Length: 404
Image (tube, rainbow, N blue to C red; front, side):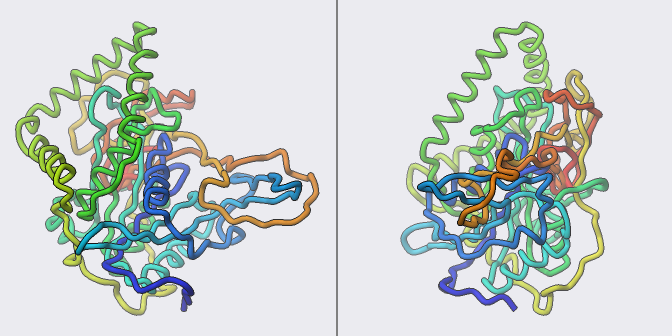
């Protein structure tokens, strides 16, 4: 049984998770959770033991100096709590931010679920980002997926149908399903030709969709301005290369054609409702989402056997897709997760030797699972790795491709 000290009784808590690495193209998902933590001044109450879940030759610790004393920062996953919302309808969020574990994924998920059980979490939302054939000049596509048919109907989400390789996002969502915890994955599609982090436009899109889902207004700070500056910078880079400019134009045409049927319907209404909420300071339509149910008893440590979500496919360096909107998933891995003192981490202090101190940051494997959502199909991998066509299905699993 997990004992929590210093954590008050929470109000309608929702757990928001993001993991650097394969699930996190452009660091969009982990940056979104980091933004929530900064804006609402999150208080860390727990960190998972790095020894249990990380290969330190893949995600290396970093050595740094603090007043002349050498300290080591270890890759880990940390949990914090923030009080969101104002007035008569506050709501608590449990933020889980870390690096995709190298091993013992089932134990990792069971430990996360143990915290969710003890804290009375009503729903788990996992954020991810994938690389895809989407133009940077258009709104970032964000897909919401779940493996719970009832939850899909009540929250207007897609029900996952993906089969294939998966990452920790897909595994955690499946673990929640088996434990009876309502779980949703939100996936942002990042243009494959600008995959390097940061991508504030994708982060902003994830936060807007999260705001709609949980019914809490999220302070955006300078994120909107950062997103505009990012797009302007990419515009300038694309204008310097005629081939890139032509390719972006082809993506724009394909995207505009695909979006045309809903351009005058639900999409416009949704954006207008968001504008009115922000102007009037009202909560979103999602309310407190308590109708999604509670946490089943007796699930601590219970293994789950299926791995039916998630997957990774990588895009060809190709033109616009002829795939259907439901089969538009993966893309190439988006680079490893980096450790820093600003990210979820576990710090040891005290004198140490110089051995290994030259390594800094997590040198993780690629990015992104694209598990359950209908994300965008992939294009060329700008990092130079081999590409192959991807299709999406279930709750997307990030930068690496097929949503699982």
